[in-house]
Image 1 (cartoon, rainbow, N blue to C red):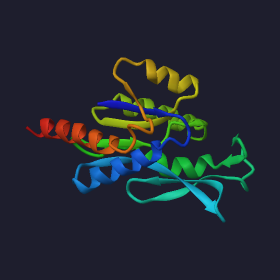
Image 2: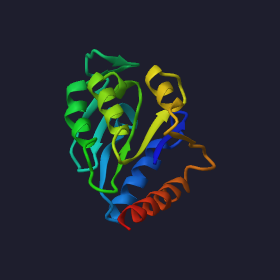
Image 3: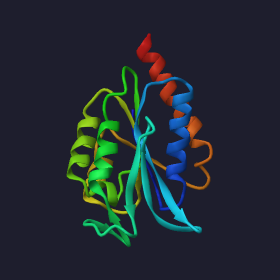
Length: 178
Protein backbone atom coordinates (compact mmCIF):
# COMPACT_ATOMS: atom_id res chain seq x y z
CA UNK A 1 0.00 0.00 0.00
CA UNK A 2 1.38 3.37 -1.06
CA UNK A 3 -0.78 6.37 -0.21
CA UNK A 4 -0.34 10.09 -0.65
CA UNK A 5 -2.62 12.11 1.61
CA UNK A 6 -3.23 15.27 -0.38
CA UNK A 7 -4.85 18.45 0.85
CA UNK A 8 -4.56 22.19 1.10
CA UNK A 9 -2.40 23.76 3.83
CA UNK A 10 -4.08 23.69 7.23
CA UNK A 11 -6.66 21.02 6.34
CA UNK A 12 -5.29 18.50 8.84
CA UNK A 13 -2.85 16.27 6.93
CA UNK A 14 -0.30 16.37 9.75
CA UNK A 15 -3.00 15.62 12.32
CA UNK A 16 -4.05 12.58 10.26
CA UNK A 17 -0.41 11.42 9.98
CA UNK A 18 0.27 11.86 13.72
CA UNK A 19 -2.93 10.06 14.71
CA UNK A 20 -2.21 7.20 12.29
CA UNK A 21 1.33 6.84 13.65
CA UNK A 22 -0.04 6.69 17.21
CA UNK A 23 -2.62 4.04 16.22
CA UNK A 24 0.07 1.94 14.51
CA UNK A 25 2.33 2.17 17.57
CA UNK A 26 -0.53 1.29 19.93
CA UNK A 27 -1.23 -1.80 17.79
CA UNK A 28 2.45 -2.81 18.06
CA UNK A 29 2.90 -2.72 14.30
CA UNK A 30 6.44 -2.01 13.09
CA UNK A 31 6.60 1.67 12.13
CA UNK A 32 9.07 4.17 10.80
CA UNK A 33 8.99 7.62 9.35
CA UNK A 34 8.52 11.07 10.80
CA UNK A 35 6.03 13.85 11.40
CA UNK A 36 6.40 17.61 11.55
CA UNK A 37 5.13 20.10 14.09
CA UNK A 38 4.89 23.86 14.29
CA UNK A 39 7.14 25.83 16.63
CA UNK A 40 5.12 28.66 18.14
CA UNK A 41 6.05 31.59 20.34
CA UNK A 42 3.21 33.65 21.84
CA UNK A 43 0.81 32.02 19.38
CA UNK A 44 2.91 33.00 16.37
CA UNK A 45 4.41 30.30 14.13
CA UNK A 46 8.18 30.71 14.06
CA UNK A 47 9.28 27.42 12.56
CA UNK A 48 8.90 23.68 12.33
CA UNK A 49 10.24 20.57 14.07
CA UNK A 50 10.80 17.17 12.51
CA UNK A 51 10.20 14.18 14.80
CA UNK A 52 11.03 10.57 13.93
CA UNK A 53 8.68 7.76 14.97
CA UNK A 54 11.48 6.79 17.39
CA UNK A 55 11.15 10.15 19.17
CA UNK A 56 14.34 11.77 17.83
CA UNK A 57 13.68 15.36 16.80
CA UNK A 58 15.35 18.44 15.37
CA UNK A 59 14.48 21.92 14.19
CA UNK A 60 13.61 21.73 10.50
CA UNK A 61 13.07 25.42 9.84
CA UNK A 62 12.91 28.72 11.69
CA UNK A 63 12.47 32.41 10.93
CA UNK A 64 15.86 33.01 12.59
CA UNK A 65 17.78 30.61 10.34
CA UNK A 66 19.53 32.23 7.38
CA UNK A 67 19.25 29.30 4.97
CA UNK A 68 19.75 28.54 2.20
CA UNK A 69 17.40 27.16 1.36
CA UNK A 70 14.62 29.49 2.35
CA UNK A 71 10.95 28.64 2.01
CA UNK A 72 8.81 31.68 2.56
CA UNK A 73 10.08 33.42 5.68
CA UNK A 74 11.80 30.29 7.01
CA UNK A 75 15.41 29.22 6.72
CA UNK A 76 15.64 25.43 6.43
CA UNK A 77 18.27 23.40 8.29
CA UNK A 78 18.78 20.56 5.81
CA UNK A 79 21.56 18.92 7.85
CA UNK A 80 19.34 18.69 10.94
CA UNK A 81 16.40 17.47 8.86
CA UNK A 82 18.48 14.77 7.17
CA UNK A 83 19.97 13.66 10.51
CA UNK A 84 16.44 12.82 11.75
CA UNK A 85 14.47 12.01 8.59
CA UNK A 86 16.85 9.80 6.62
CA UNK A 87 17.33 7.12 9.31
CA UNK A 88 13.57 7.27 9.99
CA UNK A 89 12.94 6.06 6.43
CA UNK A 90 14.81 2.82 7.13
CA UNK A 91 13.22 -0.61 7.25
CA UNK A 92 10.66 -0.75 10.10
CA UNK A 93 10.52 -4.55 9.88
CA UNK A 94 8.28 -7.18 8.26
CA UNK A 95 4.82 -5.85 7.48
CA UNK A 96 5.94 -2.40 8.56
CA UNK A 97 4.51 0.99 7.74
CA UNK A 98 6.46 4.18 7.09
CA UNK A 99 4.61 7.45 7.72
CA UNK A 100 6.11 10.54 6.05
CA UNK A 101 4.83 14.00 6.99
CA UNK A 102 5.54 15.58 4.66
CA UNK A 103 6.68 15.72 1.08
CA UNK A 104 6.71 19.53 1.10
CA UNK A 105 8.95 22.29 -0.21
CA UNK A 106 11.17 22.35 2.87
CA UNK A 107 11.76 18.60 2.91
CA UNK A 108 12.10 18.29 -0.86
CA UNK A 109 14.93 20.84 -0.84
CA UNK A 110 17.06 17.86 0.27
CA UNK A 111 18.38 15.80 -2.63
CA UNK A 112 19.27 12.99 -0.20
CA UNK A 113 15.67 12.96 1.06
CA UNK A 114 14.19 12.77 -2.44
CA UNK A 115 16.52 9.85 -3.22
CA UNK A 116 15.57 8.12 0.05
CA UNK A 117 11.85 8.50 -0.72
CA UNK A 118 12.30 6.88 -4.13
CA UNK A 119 14.27 4.03 -2.54
CA UNK A 120 11.56 3.66 0.12
CA UNK A 121 8.89 3.32 -2.57
CA UNK A 122 10.95 0.54 -4.16
CA UNK A 123 10.88 -1.59 -0.99
CA UNK A 124 8.23 -3.99 0.27
CA UNK A 125 6.80 -1.66 2.91
CA UNK A 126 3.56 0.25 3.24
CA UNK A 127 4.01 4.01 2.88
CA UNK A 128 1.61 6.77 3.90
CA UNK A 129 2.88 10.27 3.08
CA UNK A 130 1.31 13.70 3.20
CA UNK A 131 1.61 16.11 0.30
CA UNK A 132 0.20 19.53 -0.55
CA UNK A 133 -2.13 20.02 -3.47
CA UNK A 134 0.29 22.56 -4.95
CA UNK A 135 2.43 21.51 -7.87
CA UNK A 136 5.99 20.29 -7.45
CA UNK A 137 7.90 18.29 -10.04
CA UNK A 138 8.81 15.53 -7.56
CA UNK A 139 5.35 15.05 -6.02
CA UNK A 140 3.59 15.42 -9.38
CA UNK A 141 5.67 12.49 -10.65
CA UNK A 142 4.80 10.44 -7.55
CA UNK A 143 1.09 11.14 -8.02
CA UNK A 144 1.30 9.70 -11.55
CA UNK A 145 2.88 6.42 -10.43
CA UNK A 146 0.56 3.43 -10.91
CA UNK A 147 1.55 1.97 -7.50
CA UNK A 148 0.43 5.10 -5.62
CA UNK A 149 -3.09 6.01 -4.58
CA UNK A 150 -3.86 9.66 -3.83
CA UNK A 151 -6.35 10.20 -0.99
CA UNK A 152 -7.84 13.67 -0.63
CA UNK A 153 -7.96 15.02 2.94
CA UNK A 154 -10.94 17.31 3.47
CA UNK A 155 -12.80 18.72 6.43
CA UNK A 156 -15.40 15.98 5.87
CA UNK A 157 -12.89 13.10 5.77
CA UNK A 158 -10.02 14.09 8.08
CA UNK A 159 -11.50 12.97 11.41
CA UNK A 160 -12.32 9.40 10.34
CA UNK A 161 -9.32 8.96 8.04
CA UNK A 162 -6.70 7.77 10.61
CA UNK A 163 -8.90 4.89 11.79
CA UNK A 164 -9.88 3.98 8.22
CA UNK A 165 -6.22 3.88 7.17
CA UNK A 166 -5.35 1.90 10.27
CA UNK A 167 -7.99 -0.70 9.43
CA UNK A 168 -6.54 -1.10 5.92
CA UNK A 169 -2.94 -1.26 7.14
CA UNK A 170 -3.69 -3.67 9.99
CA UNK A 171 -5.56 -5.93 7.56
CA UNK A 172 -2.62 -5.89 5.16
CA UNK A 173 -0.22 -6.66 8.05
CA UNK A 174 -2.32 -9.65 9.16
CA UNK A 175 -2.34 -10.94 5.59
CA UNK A 176 1.48 -10.86 5.51
CA UNK A 177 1.74 -12.80 8.77
CA UNK A 178 -0.46 -15.63 7.53
